[in-house]
Length: 269
Image 1 (cartoon, rainbow, N blue to C red):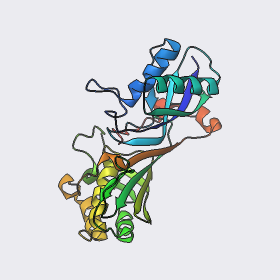
Image 2 (image 1 turned 60 degrees about the horizontal axis):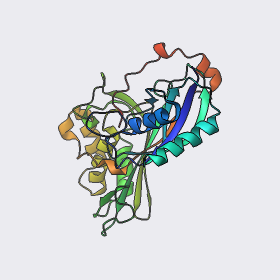
Image 3 (image 1 turned 90 degrees about the horizontal axis):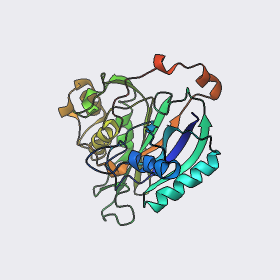
Image 4 (image 1 turned 45 degrees about the vertical axis):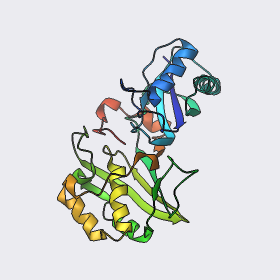
């Protein structure tokens, strides 16, 4: 069966999260519903990461196996038409045919997330449900300095959800940068994989550093404690965006045996 890789954008506000669930409508069920309406095929799609309720995506990646060998642009346009008819807040940005060794989840080399904080006295109107509003002034340089204490290969027990299903809390964090553009503070994180609520836990702890309530050493001590109680409050989901996934090129992909490279990537965000 032909396999298709799809890059997907969505507003996570009206959904219970990425994954199909019994307690509400999910992004996965929205796309699978569009595929069913278009092709009359019941398929199960796989995503690069499972996002929580309220989390957005600009570059989520999924793959689907279909019986028909579609022209990618026709499949993109047709799925978007069905998503629009259903009133979904989901858009298929691109579609490409890929070899059957490609797996949206397990072939990923690196995932990139963005967390947005708007630090100002006035509440949000346009950006409501698109960023975390913090009325206090935050020192983004202090936040960045604290963030650097978390980069590297560590046991991130402190920064994982109590409900995280990953077998190991050990991860390698490649990047955690904090920058400011006017009232907007951006936290950008990159790693091969993340634990459940890891980035939102980072954001809540770094906010405390921005308020002067934690020093960079305090943040490092929290990491070393390997204790969830040492973590700051978990930041709300509306500030989090799944931005991009990196994959090997076609030549390398053809040499990868997915069964030999399966990772314990947990719940993601």
